Picture (cartoon, rainbow, N blue to C red):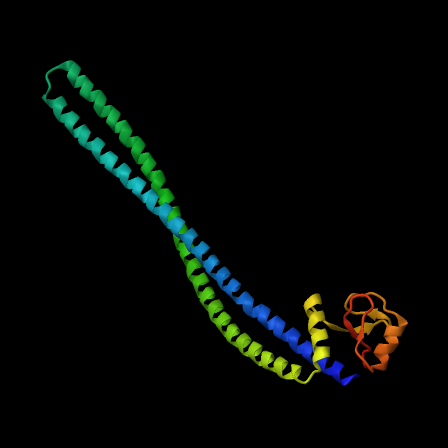
Length: 236
C-alpha cells in the first residue's frame, strides 16, 4: 500500500474517533436538559397533587364554617322561638330551624365526601413523594455520570486533536488537501475499500477495471469514478 495512503487511513480513523467524541460531547448539554426537564415535570405533578389536597382541605374547612354558622343561626331561632308569644312567629322560627338542620345535613354529607377525597389525595401525594425522591436520586446519579463522561470525552478529544495535528504534518499537503475536501463533501468517509472486486464501499457503485487495477497496483492515490472518494484494494 502507498505510504501516504496508509497515513491517510490512520488519519481518517483518528478523524472518525474525534468526530464521534465531539458529537457525544456536544450532546451532553441536551442530556442534562432532558434530566432537568423530567425532574421539573415530576416535581410539577407532585406540586399539583399537593395543591389538590390543599384545595380539598380548604373546601372542607369552609363547609365546617358554614355548618357552624347554621348551628349559630339555629340557636338564635330557638331563642327567639322561646321568647315569642305569637303562634305564627313560633311556627316561622320552627321552619327556619328545620331548614337550617337540612342544610347542615347536606353540608355534612358533602364534608364526608371531601374527607374521603382528601384521604385519597394524601395517599397520592405520599406515593408521588416517593417517586420524586427516587427520581431525584436517579437524576443525581445521572448528572454525576454525565460529568464523568464529559471529563473523559474532553480528554479524548484533546488527545485525538493533538494526534490528528501531528499526523497531518507528516502527509504531503496536496494529498491532505484532497482528503480534507472529500471528507468535508461526503461527511462520513473520504477513503473506502473496494468490495466485491469492483464496487466502491462508499457509494456502492461499480467502478471501472482501470480504476480497480490502479488501486491494486497501489502506486498512486486512486478515486472512485462515481463519488470521487479515495478507494484502495484491501490487503488480504
